[in-house]
Amino acid sequence: VKLWDLSGETPVEKATLTGHRGPVCSVAWSPDGEMIASGSKDKSVCLWSKSGELKGTLSRNVASWQHLGPETKALAVKVT
Image (cartoon, one colour):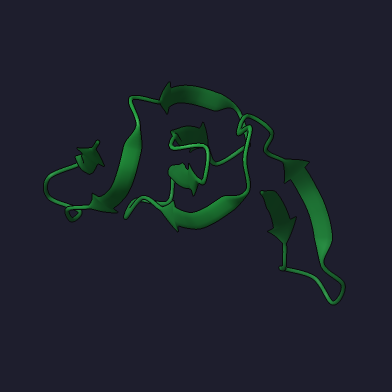
């Protein structure tokens, strides 16, 4: 996963998020814009700060995940 700054005329790469062992198939920002969740074929979800720091990994055979909404501040994860 790569983070880009699109505020100027030319995009600037700000960070590369490394932590998954398989291809990343989904990425989502938290409603407040402070966190990023990325889901991978390696059956994990990584949680990142907006600056690209790995904050945690959910890796119990994650099958799918979904953010529940800004008021819940929760991440729903289906495990297999």
